[in-house]
Length: 336
Image (cartoon, rainbow, N blue to C red; front, side):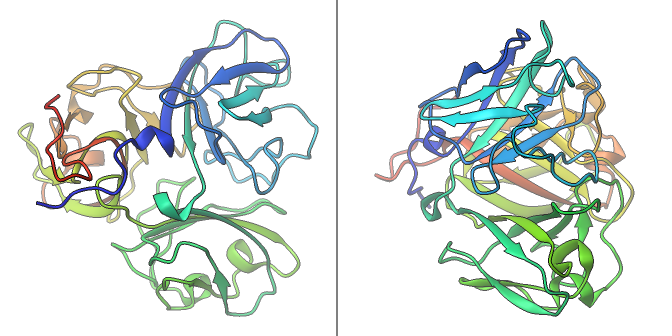
């Protein structure tokens, strides 16, 4: 039986809930170990506000959002996160927008630690409009790469190993995987040291700054794969090797939303509350046709909606662990 190298996933990923208070530099402690994060992804649960994403490489105050195609905000604009701390982060007021801290609004934050140990790297590079390779520090082959040209408006081009190096997907759109196009990944799959980009402005605009969030799999902690739906409430089971804390799914064949489910907003099965990564709408709750169960070794669909479990339809996913199915000492973890 396969076992993990990461016994405590909250050292590297956690979902955290909080309620806004409208105060400048309000501190939020990340659930679990209270880690010092490198990637912060926020969404208001109760408000129709855009997603807010900040990271330690560009500077956490420079807001971008998966639900729009805007260039990054300027540093010091205080419309997003204020600082990263040793146990979490501080958020600005909700006076400019409600993306992070409007009084009495509810929020969900997903946070990742940048380290090869957990298979996550943040790469900032300057484009040259010519096919090239970009170095990363994972020492493992990336399974998913999310990119954004932060100097200009443009879509979030996303590589996923299940659809390959010729069919980019757009995190901020509902589109299916694009037709074959070498201008994005240069028809080249990533390696354990580099990933490739073509000449497209979105991933390699001349003189532009491009951010890449680069993910490799870590057994018992993260998984980036695909499944085929069965259109049934007794739905497809997807083995991950861990009980999920976070699952994002998307049809690679048809128009659909990117749906995010986590272990905090509802906290029990069936998980029928979700947020759309590509939309600014408040969270959807109690939608049984989109439901799934978080199990000790994977997730199982309990709804039959075409966006998550259409009969014969192919989907991609990214998932991170709450707890491994088997610990590093090869002992099965306590059933949950």
